Image 1 (cartoon, each protein chain N blue to C red):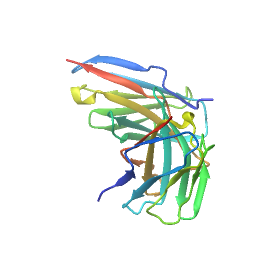
Image 2: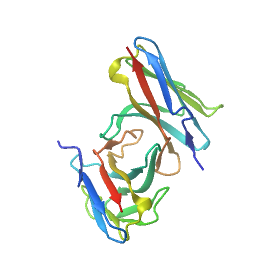
Image 3: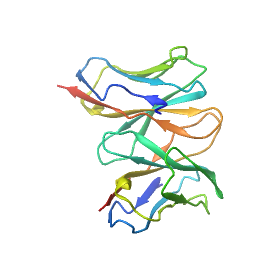
Image 4: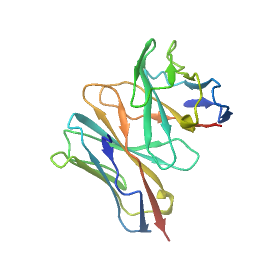
Length: 112
Length: 114
């Protein structure tokens, strides 16, 4: 059973506009959430994270929002740039162990 | 710093063969992880380790074994390769500091079992 769900396999956004990537989770014991970016033939690289005690974290063009009651988080990229075209993974860590569980990923295409 | 290195980059195995995927990190990180990524799927956690001598199962441990005799190395062993183990394998590490959960990933090993 998938604990971290990214229900959109792909997303296309015009360059300069906002990209919004969504993630849902089922385990209420998750206490930390991370977003990773992955280019083809490379390992994922860390992008931004958020603790469950916060509802927003911002780093430059990237903002992550957490809605604990809905078990939902989203990653906003503003403005979107061509180099943002990649696969984005949402990940979550439980408060009782050190496992970090990933979603299936969303492929983001930034259109010129 | 080389970060997290994985060898080999590519490997083709026959059914029933065995092999070890190597993973080394030079950042003195306590925590290390093995994931596999199947086409169109996310990363599935195979095994992880919170320090030398300590390992634990992840989501999909069947068919694999690990050991952690040093802080730097975390090899993944496939004993009897099966076609279902065809995947890209990623190793990752993180410091283990409280409140810091960012993982650093290696470039991956692409394994095909025929």
